Image (cartoon, rainbow, N blue to C red; front, top):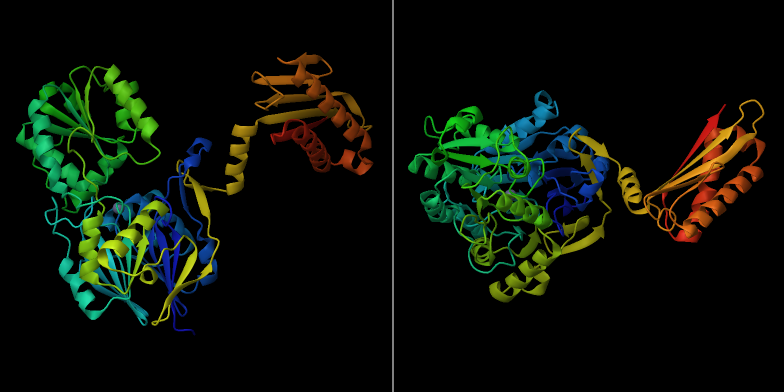
Length: 570
Ligand SMILES: [Zn+2]
C-alpha cells in the first residue's frame, strides 16, 4: 500500500455550497462534511444538489466515518443521502447532532445511524487518522475546525470560521490549540475562503446589538426580524433586545421554529420565561408589544416573510407602521427575489431596514485579517484555499502570497475532483476525477436524474411537439392523417401553440404553417417507408417517427424540442 495521503474534494471548491471532501490513506477513507448546494436550475423543479456519491462506490469498504465541522446546510444537508448509500458512523458536535437528528428523522433514518457527539478538544482515532476537534467561531454555534494527524503529517481543515473573541453564545475561537499544532508542525491548512476578498477583520456577532437596540427604541409598531434560521447568535440577540424593550417574541417558519427548538433543548439559547408566544396569542397583543422572528430573508416565496408581504401568513399580513428588519446577507443569485419582496413590503406601507443601511448583520466567515491570524497561528507548510467560488480561492491565494510571505509553490489551488497527494515530501495534484452532482427534489427527498433535469430544460427552452397518428389495429393501415401540435417551438409556434392535421391548420404565421405542412409530409413519407415490423411495434414506430421529425425540425429551425409521438390503434 502506497504511503501517500490523498485529498479529494467532492464539492464546495469553485462553487458556493455543497462542501464535501474525502481523505484517503492506504485503504482507509474518511469523509469531511456532506453539504448541499443550491443550483441555478431551480426553475426546473430542482431545489438542491448534492455531490454525486457514486464516486465513492469503489471505496465502499474503505470508508470508516463521516466527520462534520458544523450544522449549516452546505455542510450537513447531504448527510441523509450519503448515509443511505454508505451507512458509517458520524462524528460531530452536540448542536450539529441535534440538527442532523431532525434531518435523519425526516428521512426515517434516525434509528439506523450511529451519531457520535464530541466536545471541543476531544480526540477521535479513526485508523490512520487521529482527529482533534478545535472550537471555532462562526454564525452558527458549536462549530469545529479539524486537526487531522496522518502518517504523512497533520492536516488542519478549518470548516467555516471567523476569529470572534466575543461571541454571543459559547466560548471564543480556540487559537491556543491552533498554535499548539503550529508549534508541532502542520503539513497543510485547508482554509475557508468565503470572505477572502474582504479586507480587515470580520466583526464579532455582538457588533449588531447597538443597531438592534436603536431600531427597537424607535419602532412604534410591530417589529418583524427576518434572519437565517441557523443564525443562533442573532436569534439570541433578538430575544435579549426584545426582553429589554418589553416585547414578546413569536417565532414563525418551519426551519426557524425547528432550530430554536433544538438550540433551546440543548441549552445553547437562553430564553427568558414567558418571552416566547404562539401566533394566536401574538395576534391579540398590541403592536408595540411583539416581535416576529421569521424565515424568508432571501425572498423565498414559500417562506413566512414573503407570504406576509404578498398575501398573508397564517392570517398575518405586513401593514403600515410595521418595521421589517432584514438581518441577513444576500446570497448571490437571490438579488431579484429579495428586491421584489422589498417592493411588496414598501407597498404595504411598512418601513424596511436592510443590511446596507444599518449594522444588523455580520458575516460568519473569516476576512483577510482573520485569515492572517489563523494562518500565522498554524504556520502550515502548504495553504490550500477551500470553500468558495474560484474568485475567492484565488484572492485567498493572493493574500497569503502577498501578505503572509508564502511562495507560489506552497499555496495549492484545487478544484472539485482533483486528487491532491501528499507523500510527506511534496504535494501535487496527481489526478482529476469526474464527480458531478445529483439533483434532489426536496419535497419528496427524491434524487432527480440529470437526464430529467436536461429534459425539463429542453422543455423550457425548446418547447414540445406532439405527434398523434391513428392506425387500424386489424390491417395496420394509417387511419386519417397524422396530427402535429407544436408548443413553444421557435419558428413553429409564433404565439404559443400551433397545430396541423387533416382538419386544418390553426396557427399564427404563414411560415410556421408551411413548415408544419412540410413536417406532415415528412411524417407521411416516414410512415410510407416504414417496414412492416416497425409499423407493428409501437416503440419502434415511435422512435422511427421521432428521429425523422427531430432531424427535420432541427434542420429547419435549429431547435431541439421534446418530441412526443403517440400511436393510437383502433
Ligand atoms: Zn457555515
